Length: 184
Figure: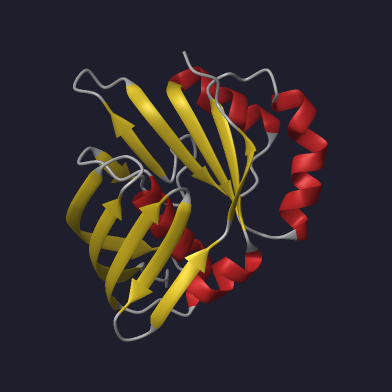
């Protein structure tokens, strides 16, 4: 018998002072049986960092050729493609060809560092690609906030990111931009 996805309910208040975006989101997040709490929390962090009324979760880790999150315009054009982890070069190039902007979030510490060292030179020519590494300590702390029902607040100011849960505490998230997309 196949395992079913676990459903998480999230009340998410986002205050992004850098982008002047302030909104409350009620999210239903399906966590695939093979997905860890850490990966799910990184998806929620990626949502907060790029929050928009049109931002949507993809169908999940079992779906190829679809990102973890994306934003499409009214014509179906993919404006933003957000991927987590360490995809291969071909997958990244395909995403950059399909979307106006691609953001890749890595979060596995030394494994991500080795992965980036092997691909950085090859991906430097992709003008619409941003690569951001999330500190392993931040991911570990974010994982402590995971629950079936969550009330999360995310504040972004001057490049700093704080995620809080009134019952489980606060996390300052350390991000390092490894590659910044060039303006169009």
